[in-house]
Amino acid sequence: MMPSAILSNQLQQRIKKDQMDRYLMNGRDFIDDGAIWKKIHEAAEPSAARVREILRKSSEIQTLSSDDLAALIKVQDPEMLREMRETALRIKKKVYDNRIVTFAPLYMGNYCVNHCAYCGFKRENIEAKRRVLSQEEIRGETEILAGKIGHKRVIAVYGEHPLTGIDYILESMKTIYGVKTPTRRGYGNIRRVNVNAAPMPIEEFVRLRDGGLGTYQVFQETYHHETYAKLHPKGTPKSDYRWRLYAMHRAMEAGIEDVGIGALFGLYDWRFEVMALLDHAVHLEAAMGIGPHTVSFPRVEPALNSEDVVHSPYKVSDEDFKRIILLIRLAIPYTGMILTARETAPLRRDAIGLGITQTDASSRIGIGGYGEEGNGQESERQQFMLGDTRSLDELVRDFAERGHIVSFCTAGYRCGRTGKCIMDLLRSGQEGKFCKLNAVLTFQEWLDDFATPATREAGLRVLEKELREIRERNPRGFPVFFQGLERVRKGERDLFL
Image (cartoon, rainbow, N blue to C red; front, side, top):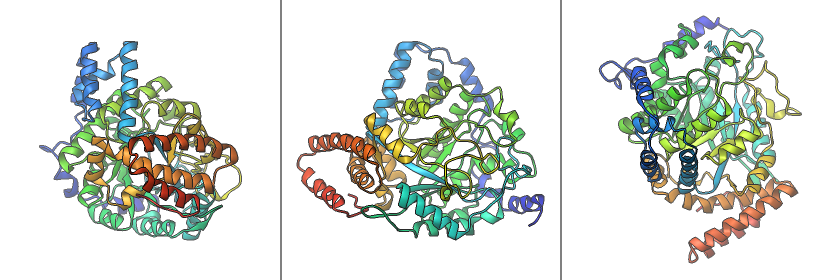
């Protein structure tokens, strides 16, 4: 294999200056560090009337302004914080109803040419055990995820390296989609492959779109220019801040309608990152017509040879982290919000009540980990360490006991409800109501095929509640829906309305 420096130089040659420069404004990108800090520093704690004015805007599913968000960051009054939490939960129910979507991460390889200070996969980490999955291994991992655990969605994760470039990505997606494996009552398969991969030129995004991509996801890590440069050394592809910042513009220009943004909290001041995430969403709406399909907010976690970053002065407490989730739900009310198994089970329970819509379960992020016994974690094989290693069955039961239904639905994407179409439905509150029907169908399917007795019992209780709501909302259409549910109960699979 070529030395990392040579490989890194090859990948840097893929960076096409014209594909990002055309989005600049007077030679500047849209993240103005000074302006963000000015708004944060100049904002005072808002009056109750001002808070309620902002919350009314959020409740109408309008994206907040940076002034609005800066004001909410300063709120300390317990009564106003309570109203903010209540509003966030109402927004979540209005937009996404009572559903939580689950998925599994599938790490394809841990070779990488970058040297990010906080990452266990960084190229100079000689203690890391490097590996790239073969197509046969990907098939085996998928059979476990779809046939034994019951996942319908995966986020396929790729390091930035020629071994896991666009050709490998497309081949692996085809392999995942090609798996159809028997279950207890029917069959299991992955119906949506989302991709987390390094920024690409437009022509590669076109190929990714045509390869059956669900959502394209990439995080800026930190939006603060100086901190970004410090953590991503020169001479690596990732050192180009703007190539990464404008990845979503290029993806959308290539026809990819659903994109996911995020920041790695703990690298810099969380207040700055929250403001910058809003700026990113606002700029996407202005330049490309729609904002992000999802926003993620992972926190820095322990990783092999990254101790200095883990003990950063910007480490985010649990209380501040829950505040971040609350603020994003209010600031970008239409977006899906992803909370991963980086976090502990108790924190994830709390976060659901603040507006989270997606989370992973049964997660193993060691390369090839799903095909191995046990759920132990090894720092030499993982990008970071997980905080919640519960199974999907345990998570479903936990959610059901708290009144949430887990949705395995992917119907909207296959019916063309993507991009601006789904954003309009989300803003109007119609998507949540429509998707409740498909959520029930897929939840029944999962309970029949995968649930343990205790989880099935808890799931059926919440399912009955959902059925009553559907009947009350649409008594005339209920018989047609119920016919579909009966077909699922008899063993028919992948039905959707």
